[in-house]
Amino acid sequence: MAQTVLHTASSRGLADHGWLKSHQTFSFSGYFNPERVQFGALRVLNDDEVQGGRGFGEHPHDNMEIISIALEGTLQHKDSMGNVATIETGEIQVMSAGTGMYHTEYNKNEGEPVKFLQIWVFPNKRNVAPRYDQVKIGTPAGPNQLVQILSPDPDDAGVWIYQDAWFNLGKLEKDSAVDYTFHRKNNGAYIFVISGQVQVNGQQLDTRDGYGIWDADGFTITAGTAAEVLIMEVPMEL
Amino acid sequence: MEILVIGTNPPILATVLRLLNTNLSWKATGVSTPEEALKKCRELNYQVFLIGAGLTEAEEAELSAQIKEIHPGIHIIPHYGGGSGLLFAEIYLALGTTNQAQ
Image (cartoon, rainbow over the protein chains, first blue to last red):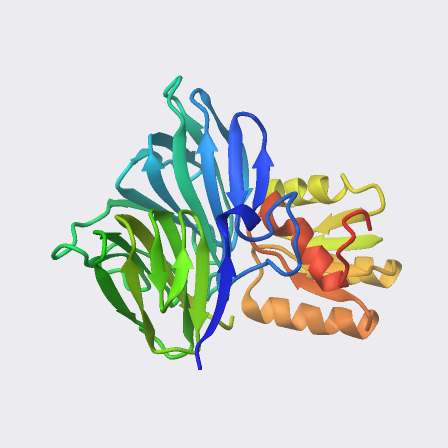
């Protein structure tokens, strides 16, 4: 029988630094809740808003797969591997931090906040060589269909990471439905509602709610309004 | 509480030590090789051993076993993420405490 967990938007941690508002689904930095640490290999899901002209100064990462998805605005990235890039709405960025790297993230557009999701997934291999990639999110094959934006396979659609994880984005019209089937038996999926209202196997979800489901073969998402969802399929055991 | 941290990336190790030592009831010491780690463990009774980036899987396993022999009650924690995001949660969870002041 399917196991599930519901994290409503309002139950998330909030770090408000003025220039940064970060809603944190799982324990992160100053927010610690032992009941909310991870969903399988999914360790961080931060819903961040950075004010114009501000950003994250140089800081380190290691041994983590770090994915950023821009929702609104643009974010400039510079790292110790020599990459300088701007991530814009409709793009996904990935870093395998491995043995260690440094980077900065900055919103250089004064007066225009940038909103993005910062997602960390535990790697299935520690101490790999650090790497960076960024791609435009593809177009769905048809209306109300999912677009794969991440997988473990460098030759598959979207970016790839060192983990048996698959991420999909879906833009759904009101009253449409989409089925999702797990790629691996022991994986679970964490569904994050970027906008709108949906039901997942009958569970009502509103904007920015999160819903985990595992011990299942798949699930169905039905849109009660026009909606956008992010599905993160990850191993439930590390 | 005495915390020993190993990591082969000096700037990241320095960042982790700085963050840990912001907690006035913790004292974190850093090393960059397994040999240094074992030497420190023989000198002092550490409660937590944090494994940072840079060791091979075999080195991590062998060093963890050797340190457990010296301090059977030590909490050995593989550290992920590099900076402050997960660091404190990793330690609170390993210690089984929800009191962030401890």
